[in-house]
Length: 93
Image 1 (cartoon, rainbow, N blue to C red):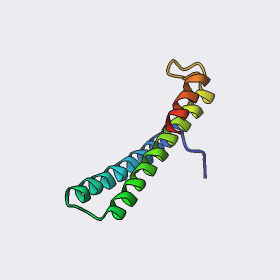
Image 2: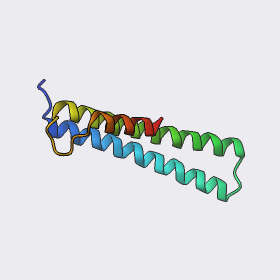
Image 3: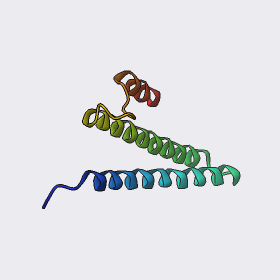
């Protein structure tokens, strides 16, 4: 068993992130439909909390990927400063 090339790892990470975002999108569509249909308050809020959590996790994945990229390639033109990363991270808090 060998080490996966970086491009394969990034592609797999992006696929997982997109799946998470699509799942959140589906959950949000369900919340909208429930509100439009006069759904039960408890069910709507529970589903909305799931959407919020899914989006938060996706945001943290994006920031952690940026952090890893900055550590691995600090001279990359797209690299973020520590202050920029901190600001992004705190935006999610």
